[in-house]
Amino acid sequence: MKIMLKSKQPSKRIFSGIQPTGNLHIGNYLGAIKNWIKLQEEDDCIYSIVDLHAMTVPNNLLDIKNSTLEVAAAVIASGIDPKKSILFNQSNVPQHTELAWIFNCIARIGWLNRMTQFKEKAGKKKDNATVGLFSYPVLMAADILLYKATHVPVGEDQKQHLELTRDIASSFNTTFNKTLDKDFFHLPEPIILGPAKRIMSLRDGKSKMSKSDTSDGSRINLMDNKDQIYQKIKRAKTDQHPIPDNINDLDDRPEALNLFNIYASFSNKSVKEILQQFSGKGFAQFKESLSDLIINDISPITKEMKHLMNNKDEIIKILIDGSNKAQEIANEVLIDIKKIIGINFKD
Image (cartoon, rainbow, N blue to C red; front, side, top):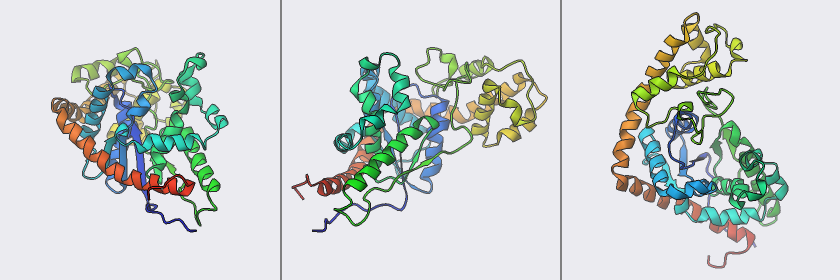
């Protein structure tokens, strides 16, 4: 008997999520949020504050509500329009966790054991890591496939997780191909946008800019004031060599390359163009120009974030409205999945 399905495969739908761990910095802005803004102008976009993922770090449990509101404020203040995109917090749509359990029964331990991010985060105390941290990529797969997303903006450190998502989708399609005359899940494609695919620490050009770094001087926070930004860029690590005119001369200069990548992202210019502009000049002049560029872009965001955080009911309303819209899509997809498996008796 042919199964009648409700959900349709969109021609193009983008899903992306950001963890509410508070204290967002320009790496989050340039690596994710700024690209989200571009994508929402042309595509069907669903953006989630993934609070369930944040719970994999025990310390995040202490202030997760406020962190969720702060990150939502940052996303909205940066330019994500709830009228153009669906914006919601993950825990408000329970279908995410229900689908994650189904995928836990499809994914293989060997697949998860290959995930390098778990190994990095768990470190030598692997046995003390939570089950949530280990199965994090399965929930990520559920986040994406619950909306039948066709494309996912990802950083280099998340590409492996998207590959796992594709493996899970493919395994589901193969397992139930006798039930359907075509694949249920489209295999989502990665989107890697912009010159700054990965923003590095201002203190170490080989380490990613991180909210968890003990040194506040390693990052520019979205809530930093002008003086803080000037001081952090002024003290940002470079090297003793002059600014070159050839991008190849930056290959072994990670700190310098990082600053030029940041400049390129804020100015929408190529690193090559920026080198032509500053070649032969000192880093002091370049850093002053970079500070002005960052402040010009970030200051309006900081101002709007402060306004929203003083009016939290406004943020909550946006998240609830977005959750209702997301749940409409998610519910249809999950009902179809249950029909395909044979565990839905209600519809």
